[in-house]
Length: 362
Image (tube, rainbow, N blue to C red; front, side):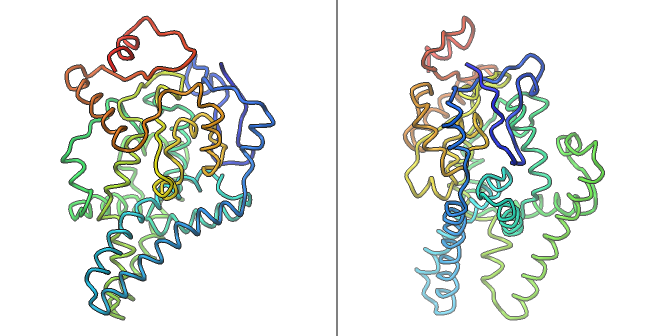
């Protein structure tokens, strides 16, 4: 079952043609009727505004609660709103990700405008991410062409607790990396690889970092002058606390699954989430579907999932079942570093290899 429809007419990131991703690879996709796919690919400015303003509106609401609680010394209100704000702020990354795909709004201008907004808010460099993420989609889990996720991915409890609630130790590496980029350094192997052939993109990468520094320096300076002490906490320093939910959501996407396979159902993971978590996560819980048909807007991924559900692996119902599955995989990988989980896929014959053993013991 292969499908070679290029499913994003004007998007920045489109799925590759067969054999484009890696030599000898033909991407497997659950086939869809062309008219159905065309409808799924149709973007809506209304739905884009609903998703974008919904997320930004929640952040404005919690920020207002934090400032009001701080000014009036209502500490319980301050604590509750700061917890909610920090938790939801980290999902700016997922909005930024979707806007990089150019699929949130029908209007390309609106996509690009709000991409810059989310880029500045979250201090995410859209030039770097677009370049890296295009490789991730075209060569998903095929190292060395995709180094966004390198298997086996290892997570320990201390990795979670280091950043889940407060992460002051993250300040130094975060700003060091961005200062180096602002100075024109390509300081890691993956960045050097994806930018090696384009001086123009290297210049854009540098300029974005410099602009972010300028904006956040202004925020801090004005806040100090006006004694708006909570404003930098709610903006510039928000990436350094309460990333617990983002960690639990984002890290389900590929961990423990297969690399070097042409089937997104084997290298990506879809999970079910409650409506609120799904909304602030920008529907990226439907991650197999997102990779299989990258031109489908995030708010239509649930519909896509329902259409192809009978040809999908079993879907964990919530974060707890998903992480129980992941924990079992990681435990097996400690004993056997080459172990990779192959979920059972309806209608496909079992491979006479280690994948069969994996499916039987999962």
